[in-house]
Image (cartoon, rainbow, N blue to C red; front, side, top):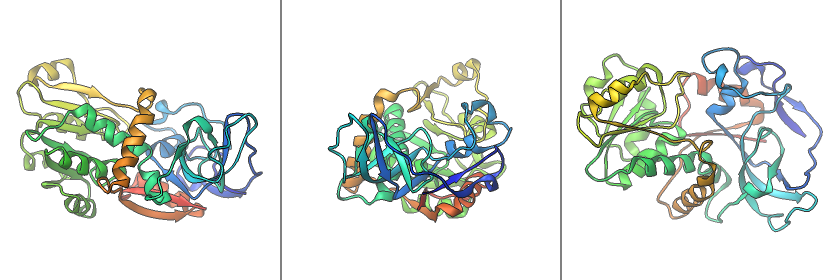
Length: 320
């Protein structure tokens, strides 16, 4: 089969398409014909060379095939594994190896795809949909809230804009380009702001909730937008800049804000329920993932470059 691999850590160009042996499912595994492989920030981090994110990278054995999520039909089940899903379309997290024509999927984590969703949209509602639903749960939004959604043009951000509006909140969408801001407007954001510009916070004004995923200077500045009253909160679900926001206990006390972390990795017991809820919302038409780019496996490097250059919009998908 064909698979994308990298033999060293480095820039996106280390990703190459190669011929590798077909995998064979073992006990507890399903063999999936990959119809769609998701591109995520974690993939970029795991491939990257030494830099601000390197210390967060788990051990990776080279050569490695990136890809932590796939969608497609199940071709076979391994020994002593339930065959009920053979022939059905599923989405699933994989430890690695998603950027390939075939992937081994843990049977326990395979989620059947509802008939009303295509593979790309189902994939976008897997990790990113589950994360968005979990972040909104953690934020406890009401119609009284004004919420700042960071990275509002990305895969999770576009979903958060929709969910925050459905909660009745006033939504301020922050992104780094006019194209991304346009997407947020069309999804229902009440106001938009380009946070790549100096002085961007002056255009925002006080907010009651920040959904934080950028970190660094942007996250620190966003925290300072929280109104100085009890009940304001920042939900932190990532730091794409490579550095967390610089927020101290003194900052929390001075503003009266709560800092709430959310991570699927830290809360795996929530994953099944959040996945189901995200897929149900997608099937009902209440959550419409934005599919920004669908590229062949051979263009995996271009997909990673778009992530690093912050030009990616919505969900990026690779197809064999």
